[in-house]
Image (cartoon, rainbow, N blue to C red; front, side, top):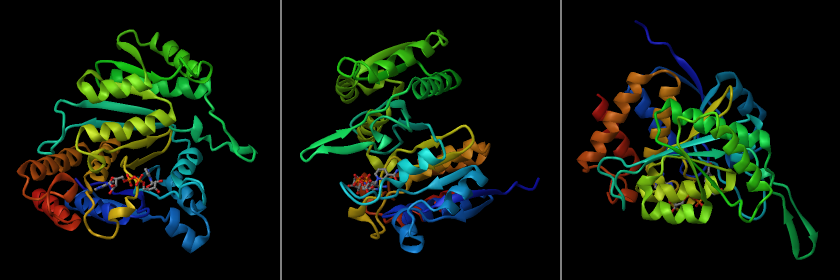
Length: 336
Ligand code: NAI
């Protein structure tokens, strides 16, 4: 039977983005998935060409195609344009960030048996970008938490846990100090938990959660967090299983899904052909499943596991010497 071609948006992004997206496109092609890529610039590259970091053509493309694979986009620190990533999530109402964190065969890490999922609220909290100078030397930054967004992300987390047969949901918060904002988040998650009595539920204060994560990560399953804690804890969890080069993610809304790795544009290694494309490839595997391409997803994952387990071809972040292109060729050979 002829395979259905997918038209998907491809956002190469900045820094290592073009290198890792090129790698993933090659591997998906080697897996025989028929995809027409609608390439769109974002971030620095888009700004140079159009004067905008998030061009309307890009947003239209994602809305039209419903699914995108995205490389990282850089955000200047302290000054310059606001985050393309935050802008994209807000513009497309990609309210849930889903980041599965688990060990990969052959990837050195401090822990084994890590298998957890981070569910990060993606649209509000301190990422609302509402900050201003009150008087010189005094700045106010607004943390926005709403019952609607907290309930929506909690629903997402519990529904995911039930569907995937996960052992429990843990709400991560700081409601002892931020009694109103994190208090509202926690109350909203608790209310949703009462509709999911078959899914065990507990709560952890964010600082204690970090300590427990680095002591005994296997006690966690689904973590649901407001935006900022979700961002920080995601990188911490990447460190549990081998680093930022191996943790995928998806930004999901009611209509649209954008798949991207947890890592950023890694300017320290950009244009050197050393970046690990595994995190974006795992995001690509999540994308294939989202598209119903389960056979292809399984084939790509099997090839990735085989190359990583064999250990002969590994990128530098995993202790190897292979370039991005050598690792990509090894994956394509494993799929042949
Ligand atoms: P980063 O994730 O880019 O890099 C942190 C460290 O991890 C660096 O040493 C880097 O070399 C390494 N690393 C990251 N990905 C890797 C990979 N695939 N293979 C091998 N090593 C890898 O974080 P950083 O430096 O804080 O941010 C750089 C830029 O990326 C900033 O402008 C930031 O705003 C942006 N960023 C974008 C994200 C996105 O587009 N979703 C997410 C996080 C950061």
